Image (cartoon, rainbow, N blue to C red):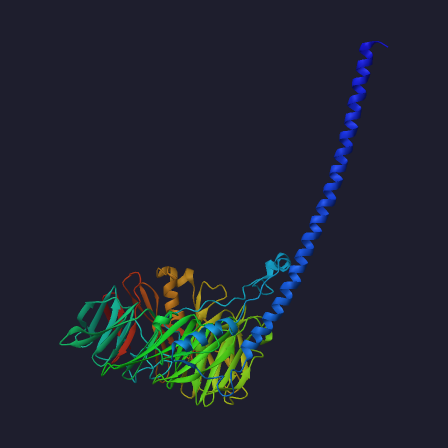
Length: 589
C-alpha cells in the first residue's frame, strides 16, 4: 500500500472515530438535560403545591378571624355603642389595637390558584365585574319633594320634608339666589331683574331669613343681604367637604380629614368599633341666629354617606364586605352603631320611620339569591328585628335605586332586566315582597306621588343601551305595582343631538341629581322639569289618565353655555329659570 493511500485511510478512520464520539456525547448530553429539566420541574411543582396548601391553611385561619370580627359581640349591652375617644390612651389602645386584632384581614392567593383561575377573579359567571362602584363623596342623592302650595313650587327637591339640602340655586318667594361662574347673584322676582352680585367661589348654597350660606371646597361663607348688598358675616374653614343639611335655624356641615392624632378633639370623638379607622369625620352644628357652634367627630372607614332624618344623622361607612352605620342625634349626641352585610348604594338606601331604621344593601360575595337584602333595626335598642334577603333581584342583579315611602320600600335591581320590587315593611319583623314588575333598562331615581286617592311611582333612568335615558310611571294597587303607559325615551340621536346634548354631566344632573329636578303636583297632573342640554330646559307633564302618560309640556331655550346648570322655580303662576348670569321668566299656564 502506498504511503499516500495509507494516510488517506488513516485520516478517514480518525474522522469516523471523532464523529462517533461526538454523536455519543451529544446523545448523552441531551439525555441528561431532559432528566434535569424533569427534576427541576418536579421540585418547582412540589414547592408550588406546598405553597398552595400553606396558603389554603392560612386563608382558613383568616376566614375564621374575619368571621369572628364580623359576628363578634364586644360586650353585652355595648355592641351597638359608639366608643368614646376621651384621651390619648383611648386613641392608642382602641384604634391601634383594633387595627391589629379586630380589623378584617386580607386573604392570600397561591401561585397555582392564580395560574388556573386568574381569568375568573372578580367576575360573575357571565364575565361582568362583581366589584361595587366606589361611592361618590359628594352631596347625597335623595328623594321626596318639599313643594309649595297652589301655584307655587320653589323649594329644593329633598329627601326628608323639613331637612333642606344645598343646591346651586335657592328661592324664598321674593328673591332667587344662585351661583354661576364664581359669582353669587341675587334676583328680585317683583322687579324681574338682578338685585346685586358678588364674587364667590361656592358651588352650592342655602338661604335662611336674610342670610345666604355659600359652600366652597374648603370654606363656607355666610352673607347677609342688607340694603340690597351682600355683606360677609362669617367664614368657616375645613379640610374636605362631605355634605351638609339645614334644619330650621341649624346649619350642619360634615367634613372629612385623614386620621391623625393632632386632629382629634378628645371627649367629642367616637369610634364605630367595626371599621378599619382611616378617616376622621367631623359634624359641626351652627346656630344661624347666634352663630354658636358644636362639633362631634367619628373615626371610621372610607366611602361615608350621610343620611339625615327628622331625628338623627346616620354615617354609613363602607368596609370590605359590610357597612357600619353610626348614629348621632340632632344635638350631636352619640346614639350608637349598627352594621349590615355588603355595601349600600347611596342615600336612597337608608330610611327612618316610626321608631325603626331600614337599610337596603348588596353583598356581592354571597349567593345570587341572597345578594340584596333589607335589614330593619329597632331604634330603641338598635336590635335587628327584621331581615329579608330572598328574592330581591334576579341572577346576580345589584341594586340601582331605592325609595322608602312610609311602610313601603321600592327597590330596582338590574343586570339585563329591570324588576321594580315593592316590599311591604308594615311588619318590621317580617318584611315581604308584594310584587316585582320587569321592564327594559332600569331606574336609578324613584319618586312617589299621589293624584286623587291613587299612589304612583315616577322612575328616571336608562334604557338597556345605557346611551338613551327614559322616564317611567308606575301605579300602585292593592295587588301590585305595574307600569302605566310607555317609557318616554330621550334618545341620544333624536332629541339630544338637536339640543347639542354632548356632555354627560347634564345627564347626571337630570337622572342622578335629585336636587336638579323641578317637581310640582296639582289635583290632576305631575309636572317634572329638568335641564336636558346646555341650551334646553324641558317641563314634562304626567297625565295618569291619558293614553300618552308623559308628554313635553314646555320647552325653554337657554343660552348655550358650558357648565350652566339651570334651576326652575314656580312663584305665583310664573316660572323663573336661572340661566348663566340671567333669569328667564315665563307664564306657567
